[in-house]
Amino acid sequence: MFAGIDWTPFRLSFELASVTTLILFFLSLPVAWWLSRTQRAIKPFVEALVSMPIVLPPSVLGFYILWGFSHDSPLGRLLENYFDMKLLFSFEGLVAASVIYSFPFMVQPMQSGFESLGRSMIEASYLAGKNTLQTLFYVALPNIKPSLITATVITFAHTVGEFGVVLMVGGSIPGETKVASVAIYELVETMDYTTAHIYSGVMVLLSFVVLLGVYGFNRSKSRKIKGSRG
Image 1 (tube, helix red, strand yellow):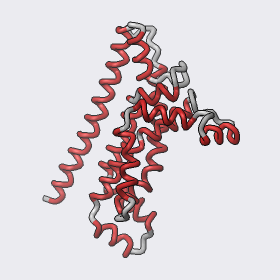
Image 2: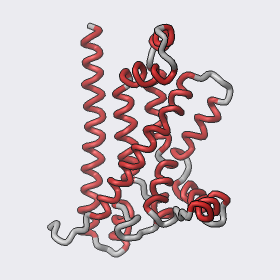
Image 3: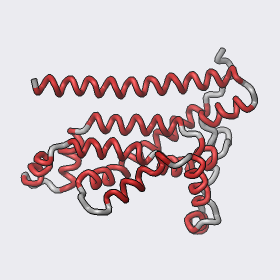
Image 4: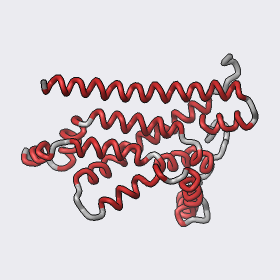
């Protein structure tokens, strides 16, 4: 049944999701921390900007990323002329696009976790002589583990499952940009439903296991917290 199946698209999907998740973890930390602590008037504007990839159609987001990476845009010309870097139809371009469209999936759970911390805990850390970085890494992060795991897993899963933006920016180059979602689309187009069923079944199973793990961990963590309070 599985003989002759090319698993390269899944390898590329997992590599893309792993690199994207790692980059976003460190990019999102300062943003989520700032959003959770600030009361400035600009906060709603920043939150709306961060959340836009969730509500924008993938075709719209993909188009602007496609244009932004092309030679017709200032960014594209800068990267090509000064760094000899062409992001369109490359794995590096997929990573850059994935960082953009998965950004809110990392930021929002982190922000919620930071906001759930009592203000007294943060103030006590400052009173103890810790600076902002020490408070973030030694006080805040250890106390929002469920939120961190949720952010990491959901970002990974969302990156694996993205289709529209990936297809527009990366195309379908075997071994380079042809990830699992694109492979399934092409299999359906060529009416190879048997292989499409196998690929889709793997994606369904992966999604279920990911969500089951997140909800199971959060439930276990919630029980421990309730038990310690009781």
